[in-house]
Image (cartoon, rainbow, N blue to C red; front, top):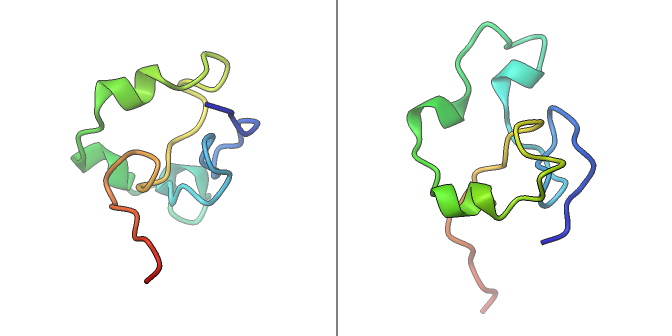
Length: 71
């Protein structure tokens, strides 16, 4: 798995917005979406060590949103 450089509001896997409310000063007083979700430990373990615990995954990379294939 290739990692994107860690930025608080960016998913370290795909580089897209991770929708983390804690990373946005306007919403930093609100709980992040991930606080109420269970992310498979295998998904987290697959992250390169240099990005673990540095930025949140987006819901898709966290395995919470199914990818759709174009028809």
